[in-house]
Length: 447
Image (cartoon, rainbow, N blue to C red; front, side, top):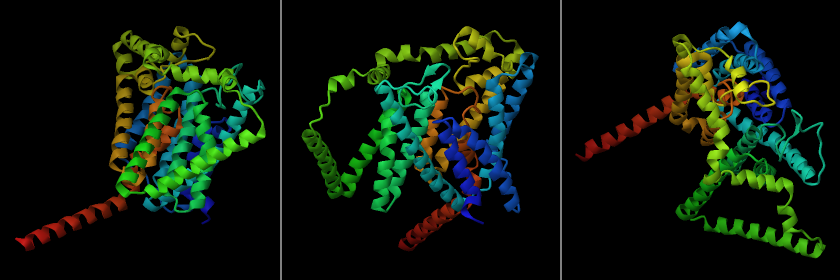
């Protein structure tokens, strides 16, 4: 079987497309085609299909059940676009869960390595397009046929209306790029990956996403601390000095070229540029004095969900009231959107499926995080960082747990981690037992 036909290749393309889909529209259409194609291919090539039932998959299927039950509870069975889109996502996520169930330790390694490379390549190309769009904006050039959402021109480097989701996809590309740089043994590949993440990094900064700026700052702090640790503990002073030398040499070269070119750059004009000013204002709103006011649109929506629940009868409190809240939110918080929601998947679950449905969603997330911590050695640190970052973003953005495909695709690997890494965990336990027995034997001889 060729590499392109393998299940792990299909999953790599699907996950990369899910990440791409949050950065540009076309990725959304591609992922559905890939899922159907590789799911059918899996049935054709696999002699036996593994279906695992554990606590995590039980929570997942129960989440699906209560979501569908919420559709039945909706007044007059009104079809809302948001719930319809989430239903499509749910169906495709079930197919992905089955595909992930077929992975093993070795195929997971191949899958994740391919995912990182494909994602970095795609997002690096998109980041160049995003920077061109930003540069055009700074020059007063608008391209409404490409970057127009609901009658409004999209600000900053973002290629879609939701700059937070756009920045999340770029953050994932950055994390994957850094991982490839760290793990690669080839100097040429390290340089290539470094070039690829440079436009991605610039795109994140000018996306205007405050969440991405905070996460990016944390990543920078972690990397600096790791560099200091490696320098002090492993005494890699020579490598650090060489790296510092080339950075300083590069900056000096740029300054020399700039000096002899005769071209003048006005720092004042750059700072006063409307795009730069808007970006600065977005970052200033993160400060403690402005944070509360900036977060009010979210907290108001969260508070309204509890108001709706408090006005519900006993049945609605425990089993939900369907998706009528999508209209009620629009009435309470008027906007140009056709539907609105709490911007929190857990609170949405509370509204459409009641306390029972909310507990199920919390159970799914909790079990997923439990397995993430337990199997982080096998899943990979970069996977854990991407998963946690995605969780932070969707918990204050999406409608239901099915709104953003990426989070539940990642969750598929965590809830099935015990099945995927069964052989590796047995070897680890056996090795620990062997070492323990050896120590006990040596102690017995000494006595």
